[in-house]
Image 1 (spheres, rainbow, N blue to C red):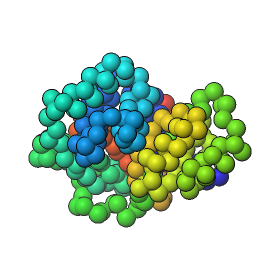
Image 2: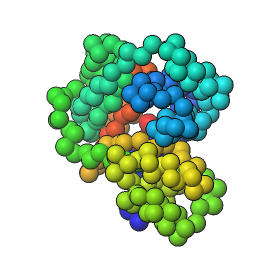
Image 3: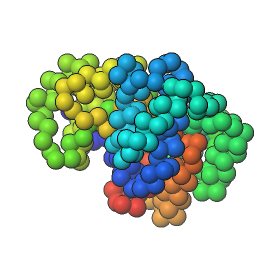
Length: 250
């Protein structure tokens, strides 16, 4: 229904290439801990937001034993949670707009590291609000369709009845957009209807994209994203780079 989503493609390819399971679990663990602290519930059966995060961990091949241990520790108060959310904005090479969403236990350390990445790879860290006006916060849900078994007509009916705004069939997935405040409810409803939810998050979706033609800028932009996503404090990196459709894009 909607046009091709470069955000979905970039996000999905990043997830496919990120083979460091321990690092992925570190990031998702922080999300789970913050979720349990904010909602007061460590039971996925009674916490749709937590259930979505647990599904996210499973879709990243995190063993069930690891997930269960984390939930038990969090429920018993054994896991200390001093993380706070920090958002940084700036420009990458060639003026690519970048938003970096972090969960950190040391704001000064994280700010210094993010600034270093921008400086090292030809960008610059900006003030709050310098690029966010180019993005719209949306709920983005990704369904697994790797085997191509999802019928588009049936999916359209289920997705719209679940309260979503729009959807598009991409390569091996179905991407759904919805109100960011309703993303967990819509994801829970789609799960009930038998769909496998790979991710369900509020995301900053760009209104326009920036293409890079200079090879040095393309290389540096890829290295900038790689460095940020390799940082344990960084939960999400949103950008408006119209990246080449190659395995080397990030």
